[in-house]
Image (cartoon, rainbow, N blue to C red; front, top):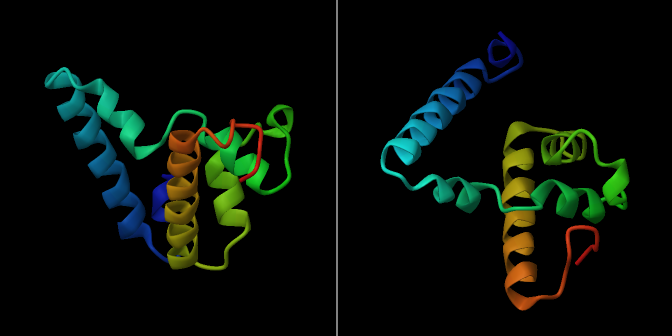
Length: 102
């Protein structure tokens, strides 16, 4: 399985299990909109724009851009959190669309 490779196989496994449990809970409680709170709508396009890629060039999603522009799992997580905050703030301020960098 893909999460059993690399330096942090337990982290990958835990992430998968946590995701399954979160989705199961959200669906059961009728609060599926909570999933958007983790990964904002348009986040992949927003991240692609941050790295100078156009919306049409984004076929691999935010994960690709985060992992290929960092050197460790910690750096990748920190970058994800930074980009997520930027995306949420830009949307709230109305200063960016998915295809525009902030």
